[in-house]
Length: 287
Image 1 (cartoon, one colour):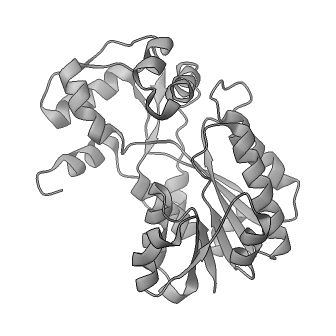
Image 2 (cartoon, rainbow, N blue to C red):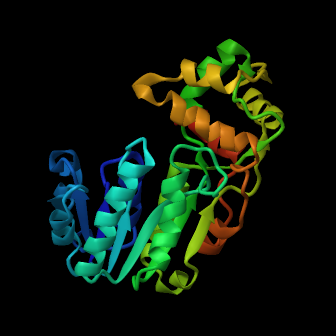
């Protein structure tokens, strides 16, 4: 068996590779990465590491050649056009390389009416795959819970959650749980009969409910006092990501980030770790 992971040195990609390493031999895993030196630790375990440039379809074909399963994790570009262009190269390469099954990372903010900057890309993914002859699975992630951990000291100082969500809810999944689901789908052909899964915990949270969870795990009083979308974008514009983040929460305020499913349970035969349990584990003294 040959399993290829692209974007294998990113936050999700690294965790997918670690999860795959618990399920198959390192020799079965090939990593396509922009900077091979960043994957040196995986190479030392016996995994193959190949240079891959999403802008160059030939390099993608070389990495995907004869893959039984390929897992595509998109690059961190901030606009849909760049990602669609990249995805077209991946689709073409997967077809030329005769990939057995393609697994693609999706996101719950893919609705046609979602103002999120990248919703056009995430909405394009299932429609484009449906037009191919490829065998595929899309794993749509909820919001990652992980950023709440380093964000917590700021929220404690502010004494409030400030997301501009109004009465709407947010759904979460952790990077580790998402990665486990990706790896499990990759090695379980019986799961390929369902083309799209949505990876979430088993409940969503309004902002007052999220504030209560954060208060409980931190032992500090945290309420809810939202800023405006414009203010949020200006406050968190590091790396010019402010507009993208604000647009995501604009979709969230419309209830478009609140999806909850039991798909994680279907894949893993257990529920996803709850948000309070995840945060408590991450914040434990020996974590």
